[in-house]
Length: 143
Image (cartoon, rainbow, N blue to C red; front, side):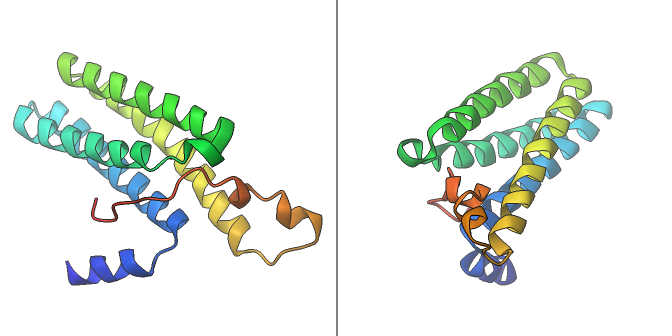
């Protein structure tokens, strides 16, 4: 636990967002496996944790500075929540697998933001980088 706390303290906001996406993906993979094994308790625990992680991401959106990106992510998180709850009600690993794919797409976009923010600035391209439009800066880093 101490190692993880050290990583969180030294991570950039974008790295924290990436870590939260990775956690949500891991949670949904666990939930899908539990669904296939008919383990309702494990499925419920994993889904609840994924929802808490997504709730943290959603709560950290900067709606004033994030503009369209923040609005799109807010919609994405609302749809995620709705679909995951539907997967829980139906006991559907397929819905969970689709949400994993959706998370992987957005996770990939955040990886691109991280790469762009790590690249050395090159004139006007630096001001147009995706990092400049970062809609999220996690507030509570304990998730």
